[in-house]
Length: 239
Ligand SMILES: C[S@@+](CC[C@H](N)C(=O)[O-])C[C@H]1O[C@@H](n2cnc3c(N)ncnc32)[C@H](O)[C@@H]1O
Image (cartoon, rainbow, N blue to C red; front, side, top):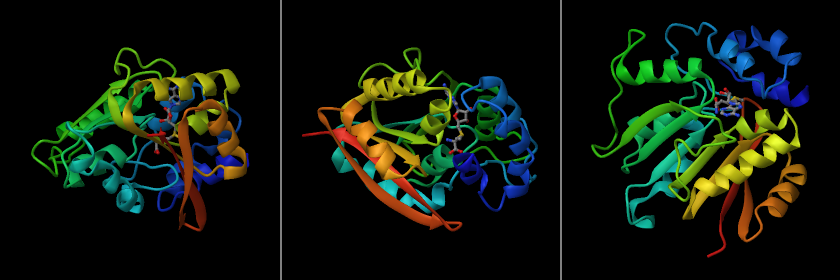
């Protein structure tokens, strides 16, 4: 349960998260019903999002250079796979000075409904407004193991996965492998897949290098945030 405990050590919402720890500790993190229950938990009224590991602020300096206009011929499309109720998509949409088209997907309808309501100005909040007039944001329900319905092949320039592969991997290697292949399928040729995780490079790098043959795999250390060091695993085309 070391990974789970680290997942849950996310101040300042620790109290909210630990309320679900009992069920999480005995459940499979790849199970949708479990996540529906987690995402339905009450949040403190002034905090509409909940982030695993860390939030947008901690990684905006890492993410924004990946989105710079000069890198892409078209409006860059970003997919946050297993977005949950994280503030990552919201941060990119409301704060990126570069135009960006953001899609957050999660297999939990509870998480997706929450994020759509936040976007549209529910929960007593103002509707979200873009940091750049051309930016766009939406949330859809989808399974990370099969994104065909929401993501044609090669359609995203940046694919973000913060803690989702880690969760899917708890359901066993076949699902984890399928999810990674699906992420690679939807990535554009110039695109970058970023897996944010607390898993040690000794474990994650050999797996990614073996599965993502023909691409470059690098790792960048992040943090420590709340006393914990995280990693960004980047997968991109060799050219
Ligand atoms: C550890 S949480 C991370 C949530 C969010 N990325 C964040 O950083 O706060 C894992 C997320 O993956 C979602 N998830 C798990 N398995 C999934 C699957 N097969 N397809 C889509 N989403 C999935 C869960 O609903 C949950 O929101």
